[in-house]
Image (tube, rainbow, N blue to C red; front, side, top):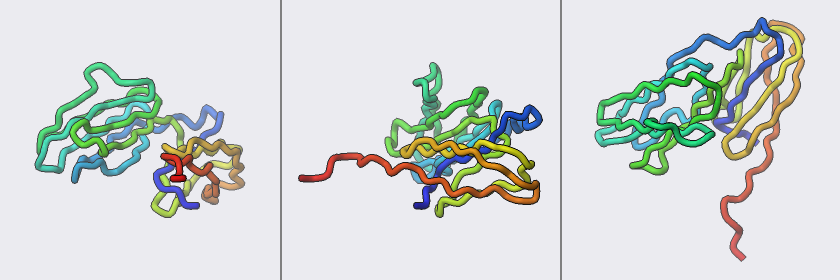
Length: 174
């Protein structure tokens, strides 16, 4: 089964594979939603959230451990807010004015990270030979970890990982 928006990371215990340098990514609020829905960045990165709509939005920043003080930002039309992500974790971006609008920012120091496409595909190129830990996370389906071996630096890493079926969101009608 193809799973869209799963975050796939590839790590190992070798110190030579340090976390990538911080980056700046954009997660746009447009049509009262966030695009893209999932973003992965290394620690120390920033995410810029512009408002492409004619109306007001807000950006509450909610890490896994709960809310942060002063972490709800007003976002006027044509406005933007820059968010800093210094630490590893899963962070939900929401909008109190549009309850369905949300996006995930995964802050992870993995040297290789990808998000599955609409067909559930991803690939890593240029991975050095050796033993690696492949982790697949999806918001509703959970996390699967698998050990993989890369034979040569010229091969790309593509693994088919089965995620558990989601629980129904409500009981079936009798």
